Length: 136
Image (cartoon, rainbow, N blue to C red; front, side):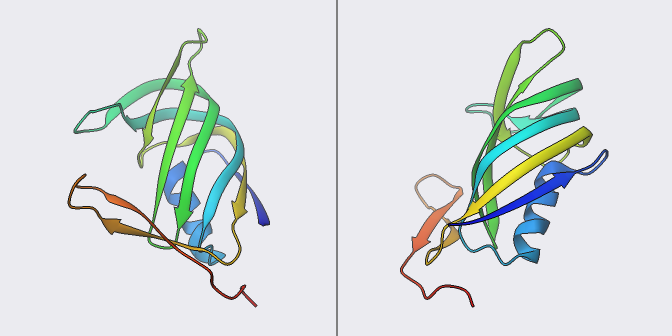
């Protein structure tokens, strides 16, 4: 496994920045290993919801998990508010960094992730291809 680390700064939007990093580093099969930081507000799709929900206020990133590839990402996040109450869901665009986000990404060698429309779920789901020759 190859590891990548990045730090996002105030105002950067978490999901688009992760996708931009994935593209810039040609990450074919990425996963979030760890993440800490804070958001100035959040935009999540909660469980079984058709649309996103905007959360106002400052939040600590308690966890961030998911997969990254060149044609999309599937990320879930848990956030704690100023009272320590935690909420989580599917990460959407519109989550600006408050002070920082420190993220470590793992890249699985010899594997490629893709996002393909699944007729059963209606979402672009993970498709896995392996083995591939390592990047050179």
